[in-house]
Amino acid sequence: MLLVLYLICAYFAGNLLFGFVVGRIQSDGDIRAEGSKNPGARNAGRLYGKKAFVLTFLGDAMKGAAIIFIGRLLGFSTAFQLIGLLFVCIGHIKPVLFQFKGGKGISTLIGGLLAVNLWFVPIIIISFLLFYLLYKGFTVPGLFSLLVCAVAFFFIEKEMLPGVIALLIVAVVICAHKLKWRQFLLMRN
Image 1 (cartoon, rainbow, N blue to C red):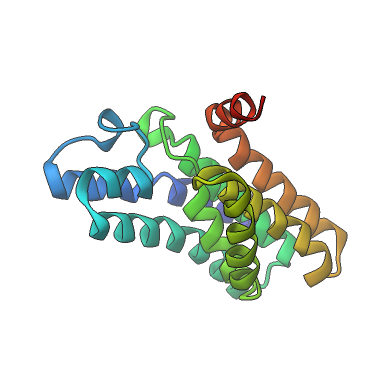
Image 2 (image 1 turned 90 degrees about the vertical axis):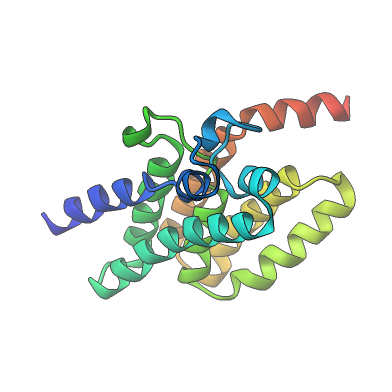
């Protein structure tokens, strides 16, 4: 029963869209109706400035980290903590409280990965910089760096299941970016 409650709470924690909150405070508007219509940190930054970017990024990242820390406090395995992270990411991408119109999940995933293991800090930074040199822009290199993190799970955790779950979470976040992948593929042809 505790496991089910943990996953339900993770999903609803994901429903808290910090970009929406920051947008309400900044302009009393709905960030999902402005700019790129994404309630994520990049759109918040474009619309409301650097402070809004930082607040949105940190808020969304903290909910991913919080689910990992709560799972750890409850004594759940790394694999089950990652399932909680999957649920919080799904809650962010498809929030029932916002008619299933949410963000893309990158900040939430980053926060959760960093809470699992701080070794992901240099992995994310180095792999992002390398992919940025190849592709320019932020989205595709960011997604590739998260994919590198998921693969790194196999070496850091030395267990198969956490790595498989990490790959699944990254796949969900990549699927939320389907338009960006189409743009990337068209740009490369």
